[in-house]
Image 1: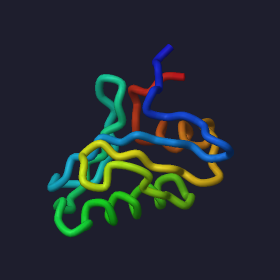
Image 2: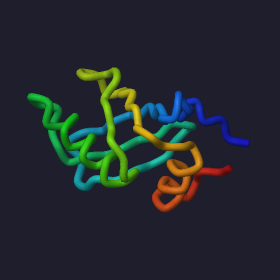
Image 3: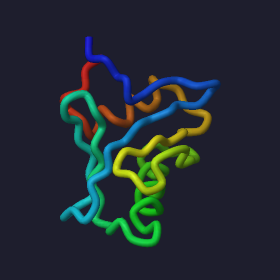
Image 4: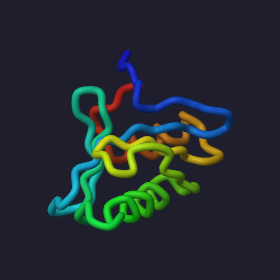
Length: 101
């Protein structure tokens, strides 16, 4: 079974750790070496990448998203409000063919 240290439940929410790659050709989710990678087109300037990433996560997971840590880092920790692991994994399976339950 694949260990998902980047994804855990927390009091009715889900905490997700994301490795962000900015200034990419397209916005997309990837999974590599047991980490979630989100590639975004926005540059890491004046919060543009954070704003873009939050919008992308909100749209993908259809929930409120709070940036909890990593404001100026490529490794970011988000809280996905009122979510379950099952819901989040279901959304990710559409994007990530290498994820295993």
